[in-house]
Length: 212
Image 1: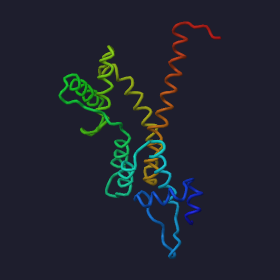
Image 2: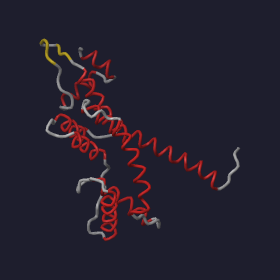
Image 3: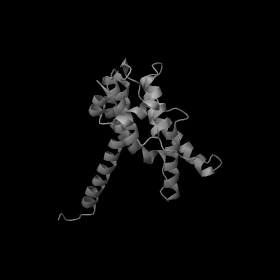
Image 4: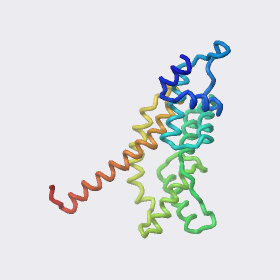
């Protein structure tokens, strides 16, 4: 297909497609003449991934380039590719290593992960994210322990096993990363909304509010 057809198929404007190519995010098409190149379905998939990372994941171009590089690196396993995307999506967390409360929260997070038997890289930014949650709850007067967080962990396992099961193990790597981004961001938002709806419903039952 020509670049105009690629634009129509992907919904990405031609100037944006050219920008992605200049930035090294999208490979050039197959040159068929001095002024014409042909593009294929792999370009459509790549544009879908870029849009997911940019519009759903809200990642900067530098982070998208890092994820794209992992997708293109055939020496990396799918686990490593998805890990690169996971870490790119993780928000920056300031870890004041000299703070005793922070060290306690991080130790609590590490102990919970170990107790669950989860295989998490020692430098995973999500460890610091969990520590920050524990520290925040503690400062709000609602101390979080490993036991109090286990119900959330069990729910997370059920959800993630469902999500991972939807990713074709031998499908295009772009599609797998796109599914991860959508699952993490959009389905994460859906989970938050459903949880708040369930809270309202449970509150009505618990406090015996009459239906009206």
